[in-house]
Structure formats: structure tokens, C-alpha cells
Image (cartoon, rainbow, N blue to C red; front, side):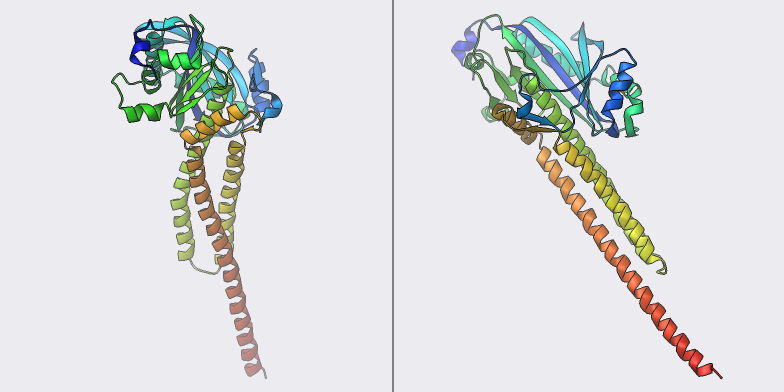
Length: 378
């Protein structure tokens, strides 16, 4: 943490870096990534498969590497000044897309970097000047043939903001950096002083591998000091946000499905019994299909990235998943899936029970017919 003596020194100048704003959307049940590459090629654009640049392939395992796309730059107005932002997108096979706006930073004092980051946050968060919807519509139209069961509209989204510094006007270690600058305003977006407890909590997730790099994570912002220009931590944070988005999507889907399921079961039980077995079996198959689909997609989300040998990247990735509470949402999804599994198991049991009752009734009717025939037979 910066002390009074260090803060009295001239603030460091960021030689190069960027402010990166992400927004993630769920747009389909699945996305055919091979077809995305094909349709993007017809637009004379290059699509590439996502990979971590500085991490050996054997240390990181993608389930299905996402497709990276480059879009045309957009103009943002930051505190009255127009700037150009680079635009890229990542397309994931489990139905999510991530759009990133990158505003380059060069030769800015540290306080100006903080102001720039907050200005980007305000600019991309304004409903009237929001660039996200236009970019999403452009992307959705371009890759429409690759979308499997496209989502017409979803209010779900995830936002994340990252301040990246590649170098200062002088050599600086991670320890020097934390002594010279206050990271809290950049990570919190607050102009007022925070309490000591709030500051400690905000700076709790700090990571360094070399003496001259630093990663600090919070719920909705991160700071990365990476002189070598590696983007692996940025990619990992983006994937963690995509996993959170998808888990939230299926959590809300099941939240809506459970009351509907109870109503359907109650309606079937309230109807006449002759075809109850078939109706219960059909309803059970419907629920079983839902469970199978959600389970398949959540497994894809869970396995989107497996960090095996890179201990440092694994720590950052695990901390991000913990901060974003992905495991909590995933556990909620599992509980709701268990309820649906129990329900369709009970429905199958009721279907078998209804069939057995119907057979018993038929047997009794046949016996009665035999007795009647025996009595009235001449």
C-alpha cells in the first residue's frame, strides 16, 4: 500500500497500456464454431481460435477453443473527447459471446489512467450512448447461420473492466508500484476515501509471478501490470465471466421451469385416469430431456478451460471463479436439476403404478365377465 512519503513523489507515468471493457451475452443454445469461421471468412475477415499466448499448450486444456473475431473500431466519447476503441469478440460453443472494447493508453500520469478507466466505465454504461447493442446485433447477424436455437432476447449480461499497464516511464517492480500509487480508486471507481476494511478487502486478491508483474482482482474490475505484454490473464478473466454468465442463465431458466413443472404435474394428476400412465410418462420424458440438455451444456461450461500445470495462472483463474461466485451459482443449478430428476423419477413411478392399477382393473373386469357369462350361459 502506498504510504505518505511515497505518495509525495512525482506520480509515475504510464508509458503504454489499455483500458478494456467486456460485455458478455448469451445468444443461443449452442454455436457451431466451424460455421462461424466459414461465415466470417465470407466477409473477408480473419477468424482465429483462441489460445493463451504465453502458456504452454500442455499446461492449459480448452474443451473447445473459442473463435476470436476482429470487428471495426468504434468511437467513444470520454469526458467530452472522442477516442477510437478497438473491438474484438470471442464466440464460445456453449452459446455465449464476449465483446471487448480496448482503449489504448500512452504517456498518461497514473491519476489520468484512473480517470480514463472511470470515463470508459461511464461511457459504455450509458443507455443512450451504449455501443454494445449495435455491436451485438452486427455480430448476431453475421454469425446467424451458426446459431443453434438462437435466443431472441436475453436481459442477462456480464460486464468487466480491466486496466492494463505494460510499462511506465521508468523501471518499476510490483513492490515499487504498490508503494508509489494507490490502486483502490482504480479498482473501486470511487472518488471518496474508503474505510480500511473496504480497502483491505478490495486488495485481497493480489498475485505476482515475477518481481515486475502484478494482478489485482475484484468483482467487476481488475488491474494488470504486465511488462511482457502477455494477455493470458485477460483471456482467463474473460472465460471466467463467460462461465458465470452461462451458469446464471441456466439458474434463471430452471427458476422459471420449476413452477411450470409443478403446475403441469398438478394438472395431470387432476385429470381423469384412463390414460394417466401415458401422460405421466410423456411428462417425465419432457423433464428428462430438459435435465439432459442443461447437464450437457453446464458440463461444457465447467470444462471450458482446464489449467493443469501453470500454477500461477491456475491461482488467478481459481480466484476469479471464487470472486464471481461461479461455484455458488453452479451448486444452485445442480440442486434444481436434482429436484427435476426426482420429479421425473416420481412421475415414472406413478406411470408404472397407473399401468399396474389399470391391469388390475382389467383383470377384475375379465373375471366379472367370465362369471356373468357362466351364469347366463344356457
